[in-house]
Amino acid sequence: MTRFIHETSRKQINVPKVLEFSWLRDENLIEAKDLLKHQKLKGFLKMTGNVYPDLVKVFYCNLEQDGKNLVSYVKGVKLKITREIWSNVGGIKYSGLKVSKGNTAGIQGFNKMQFYRSCVRNPTEPVARFHVGSLTLIPRLLAHIIAWQLTPRGSNHVVLHEEDLILLYCIMNQLKVNWVSTMVEHMLKSTRLPDYRFPFAIFVSKLIDYFEVDTTNERNVTIKAASEIDNSTLMKMGFYKEEDGWVFRRNAGHRAEQEAAHQGNEGEANADGVQHMDESPVHSFMNEDVPATNNNALVAYQEPEYRGEPLSMFERQVLDRLDTLSDEQKSYFEMTQARFQHLDYQLEGFQEQLAELYYKQM
Image 1 (tube, rainbow, N blue to C red):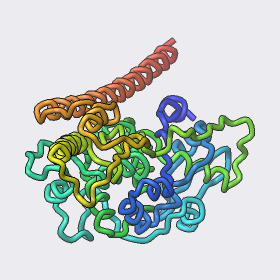
Image 2: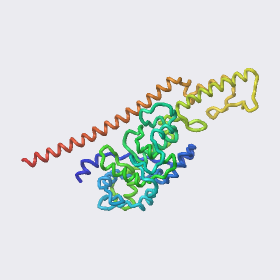
Image 3: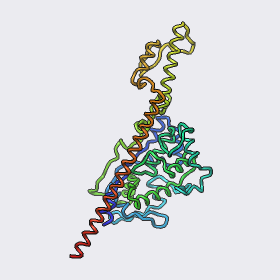
Image 4: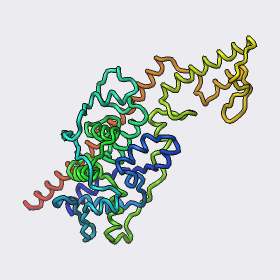
């Protein structure tokens, strides 16, 4: 009880995220969809429902490992999480490679620097650290799922840890990971380290329901739509949707330049009276039919959909650097906040110990 009051009750729960595979299909993110299905993660990633925040904290306060299984007690009910429970409640089977930081024996050919370079937009750029902002679309999305759903953490999401790279490598190369083992280790780590938030709140809440713990009058939070991974998630990463798919902002600007040049060439050709067989007399813009004249092409290019005149290479580099700095500052702030919170807990503990010593001497 003392530990719960002074430590566990003060720790935060990781914000649960939900991934709908239908969204991956609708956005033509078929590669990510197939890679995740190969890992047998569909049921776990799309899991939604209510969360009992207070009982989740009680679960982690009493969590311990008993042999191969996790065991906890919530309101006097013993929750023994066997492999069958993982399969029935979480939709994850105990199978695959057991990998973690420092444990890559089952992965042949893994080199984190080489793998990271194979996933970035510009492999020739020098690597100061493994930053998610340099990744291409599919690795970037998978890294987000790893950091928010599979091994969620409360801060520093912009940097790929070694374990993130290992898991991403396995997913990208269709090496089946033993996710039960990975998640068990992550859950136990959250009980030991003060900076770790409690993960898998939806899954733990479903365990509480599965073992028929009395939830009468308990706080019950419904997962909101804001917790879903969707188009807004990709846009925050710097990707923009175009007709043929999602592209990074720099690529989008480059494509706008190419389209502007192409439209200019068409205007010159039409001025000379040349009309190609495969040219359409009408361009579609913003779902409206616009006559394909040079003036109309310029008006279309200046519409907000194209975000104004294309940026120069220097301007793009400055914006990318500002985005990176913003992510880094947010990460540092969250890390500093967590450190100060931990110091606050320790200070309160010292004050209570001093008070106990004072009253013992009276």
